[in-house]
Length: 230
Image (cartoon, rainbow, N blue to C red; front, top):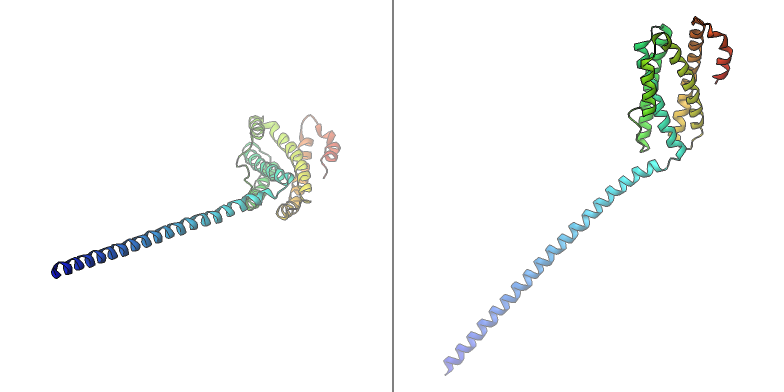
């Protein structure tokens, strides 16, 4: 009889021990799963933080360009297109003209406006503004017309264009000297004397070409100089 009781006690103790071990194992697994969830949560929290930094950086670039007023943005676009046109016309003139004076002027336009275009592009990039890389349709059409022009009239047409274009460009840059954005204002102040020099050169060469024309259209020289004086 005692033997049976002892066996029952031993059996009960054995089952209790097993239950205890199973309980410990369950608690251990729960702790592991909780740790994994915590780690996953922490990783997820880190990703949006990195994204926020990147987003802030992108937003900052956009804000750099948004600080410009419409007149400043328009100046960047017009100055870029005008500079591209000067270089393209200069290149065309070196192919079409036979006049030493006109050729020397065209080469100076290529050199000076290429340098100005490069500086303007650098400034625009710093302000988050993308400048046109090619001439718009209207300017391309004008360039095509000049390309098809007669050789004996090309020099006169080119120099007339240079006088008129530089007069307009000088007005554009005079306005830019009053901009609040320092980069644009300083560029305009620096470039303006070069444009004024170009204009004087263009008027002088244009006047000489008019005098040499066989139809004596040089009689209107005083009016030309007054009209394009800057």
